[in-house]
Image (cartoon, rainbow, N blue to C red; front, side, top):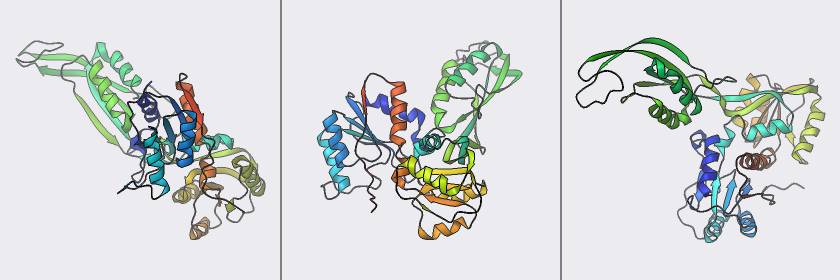
Length: 364
């Protein structure tokens, strides 16, 4: 098995096109064509993690956070980033990051935190816009079912909890094949009328290449007519944060105590507790202060995230509880998520969870 087989599968679940503009998800170092020995999964790639990979015989490290965010003008070992890269290259270890693209899918980083909190009725807190496309194509009626099936298998036709969605109308298509054509139906230099079906279906933008490939492969015509439209609809399967509900209304103090136990942390910074119980919970693993107003608009009782600045706590304004539980703490289960995804798909290679606590923050 090649390294790229693992990373290609990860990208089929969390496409790189879903990463934020500032991000650097994907390959950081290494040869994707190399034979895979073993995988080590970590939240952060630091020198100790690379050494752990060496000791475990892993030649691929999959991390959540990219070790490189900004361009490097030299690699001389003058800081931990350069030392980590040098060590990885020296030992032929590939480093691959799956960061905000994993944050921005409905069953990604935030979903596993929801599971730990036993939230129900979960949905994306801030769905992405302009991530949906519509395909319109025309096919002979007798081939419509085969083409629809091919498009659905390629990833088209999913709307919320429904799949294989399409709209179909009958009509007549006309064309005249030229001298150099090789028509599937009709004759050269004669106008032909064919009973056709107009098929309309939607798909996520990141699946466009495979959708068009499936269309061209399954369509019987030599020249395939199709239209692509960008939709302004929100795509509820991609976006930032999640909001859900707990099973039973909870006292704020007890909820925070339970949260501390789940996250195995001694400290959670928070705003003032209002005189009401918690029902709706919004969350975003890692730095999520940019979602505070979205959580308030959706009437969440508490927003769990991290990295809030001092003045941002005032923005709660008595409308919501801000629970700053720590960056590492709210993303620590990402390792489990990646591990489970890989083990369910592949069972012919060694996969390890890093035993290194990479949290750079300590408490006293």
